[in-house]
Image (cartoon, rainbow over all chains, first blue to last red; front, side):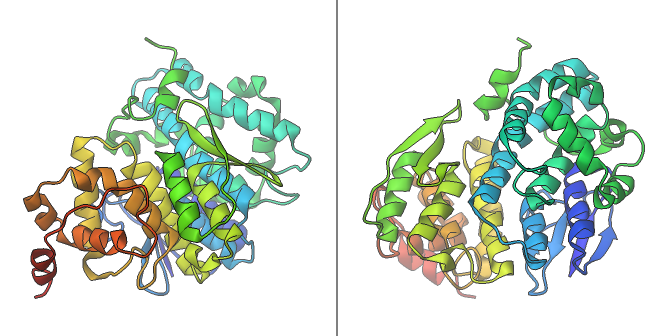
Length: 220
Length: 172
């Protein structure tokens, strides 16, 4: 099994942390941004996991889920629900926020875009009875959400003051060996700066497509 | 759209009890009130229905297969839903190349990913001109196969496909 990742790509954080956390045997190869991806995709996507059967996985969440299930963690409704939320609600907002923060230097506006998803996450964490999102121990959901939020939160942790539960949860994960190792390899140093070349290759986010993300955006 | 799709899926799965759904947020995310609390999100609700119908194989029959189903379900809601004119072409081109040597999205058996991709692609395929259907012939062949899959089509209009051309030009 081969996992292709590239430095400075935020989606690679999750999968690398998942490999470290689950200890699934997997040959990790670092490649240049657009060198590889699913063999049929017009836009090469990283990370990509070449499965034992020869099929490719090009979705970072599917890769993480695969690694956790291989190590014995069965998927269930709550896990599915968080992963879907990450993909459909958090990612569009994050893409827009990172675009602003990394390419336009508008960090304050960027954190406004993330207010709604962060406040939702905070509510869920404060209502929950476990230290992690779905259980007493780290699940695929924690790794995926940590990886998604790391570039932002590790750079602007003061902004987290408002979200006490998110802050506590994020620091708990940031203390995990697996997360530290992944961050060290994919986004060494200042996270947001390390993302610059990746963000320059992304198409500009169009807010009309995701009305949810747009309505969080307070700039006219 | 999502709610019609859920009702068609319920019928396809042969679920006797028809659920009531609500939506939340600006994106009109479907919500199902289950015995264990709310189930939120199109994919999550669909997976829940599949489990209720005791058809776990539709979510994949092995860890690897489940990951592929997951990936294509995600592709449906992130890439196909709400895609603009230009992106439609990329989606169809990519899927066309991918489906070249496949009967179903994840290989040789039908899964939930095929059902939801069929529902999601319907509005795009309806708008294709005849020559475009030929251009994306693997997608068209897969689509036609799916619209004839027993019990799947329900709320959707059948799309006319000139079968002989799509099928014969598929052979080399």
